[in-house]
Image (cartoon, rainbow over all chains, first blue to last red; front, side):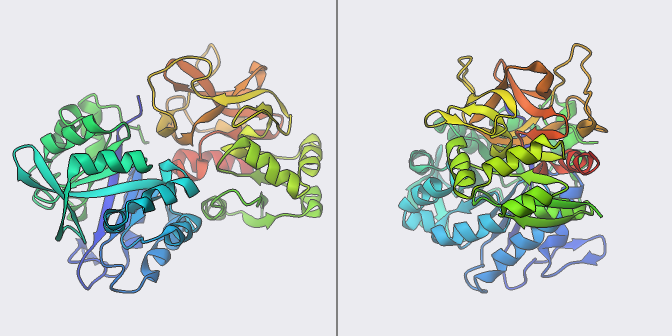
Length: 254
Length: 211
């Protein structure tokens, strides 16, 4: 049984590279590298970096981030945002990314998943799903940074993507993201039950109890957190300690 | 200033391995030529992908004999992932292939020896275990690393050694143990990615620089 992974996630939205994030007086705008290295130093098991506006602000931003990240981050790095073809993926993987996350481009052309998986291995391909509740135990996948409806049922889409070669699912609840009111447990459990690959639960973490809940009851293989660490309410060591106390199998760091 | 030669045989992201060694204060050079191998002080053979492809690429570049000769001189050598697997005599992935032959044993699929419900590939953090009755590590590569500390693995195949003296650390896959770290003299190998294993990985790389 693999250890549950604690993943620090950074999203870029809006015109500034980091929107409104302050870190104890150290205001870093346009330097996600500083956040990523800080989380790495605090013991994050992985770093996920999604640049939802990469395509608007020039394709090079993600490449630069990955190359810089490799300078100071020595845990697996997943990057996503505007990856449209095998060449985009190749460039990022060569620069130091371990996995690429696909959302919009995969919805538009699902064969892209197979192409990247064939070239680099399934373990390099993460399908990023932004899920919004549309009914009782039904969710729809959204694209373009969680703004546009795709018409796809999340469970069906997850299954199909895995058949095409996705090695992991990054599952974000659009409803819960940023609210710090807990994960959508039904969503996570439903997707975990539908696919044979790891599922990273994302969106909603506010307290360490939420993490325990999504692992115990949602059966998440990994948990990604963003707002709660960006705004300093929780630290990664706090989260790890709480997981260990709750008897959740996580990596022990010094 | 410690100098490390990383063999580039077309098989992997070398950037992270390079950066990890540079962070530890070593200078890094990428090598493809027979001459640089002969003169090297310290060689790293990384690699991601299949055993057979790895041996093919090394053969195409004429690097197999020079690497065998280098290892035979007893100078430090580190194999990572497929690079470690190639240290074995043979590999079974997609056919039967001959390896560099430093270690007696074979590289087989993780579920070859025992049926398991575990998913393949084995991806994620797994604890490093001692292969000794006293439960401790006994190799300078693991100075400062404790049994139970985890490393990051991504693989479907693993080395199963016929000489238990070559096993420095093990890891579990289902109920089977496979070689996580191998070593013979100053030639060592890690199945996991030390450049992706956080502080534990960097400690192992740092210890390699001191071998």
